[in-house]
Amino acid sequence: SERKSFKAAALILAMLLSASIIRFFLNNKIMSIKKENLELKEKNLNLEKRYAHNTINKEHLDSILKMMSYLMDTEKIYRDPMLSLASLASRLNCSEHNLSQILNLNLGVSFNNYINEYRVKEVVEKITDGEHNSKSIIEIAFESGFNTKTTFNSAFKKSTGKTPSQYKKDFFST
Image (cartoon, rainbow, N blue to C red; front, side, top):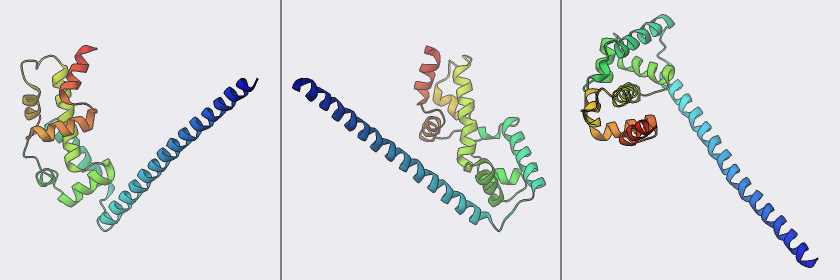
């Protein structure tokens, strides 16, 4: 009887300890999420302040977004390794500041992240279509507009959560 009471008390103590540990980790996660939300709000406020004096009218914004989509999807200008904020702004007949504002406020990305997403998407399509097996992944990356292996690997992992070779291996093993 005393042994059963001891086991029951030990079990209750273990459950309380487990609950406390779980609560501790949940509280930490909640605090982390709150901190991230606060940082995002602060970033958005900073962006709004940064661009407060420079508003773009709706028609002009729509025109730039439409032309940008055409240049990226049809002309595939992201393949140019020398593509810059200045050169894209020039093609869109807008200032670099306005283009940066459009990317940051309307699409929520920086210029480099915007361009690299297109490049990564093309690399993924090419390494998974089976038609480019004779080329190395880095050759495909350079054809898609990346100009350094480091930038490519970093952008690829950021976009897919995997290294390029792991992505290819996982894709063909399924």
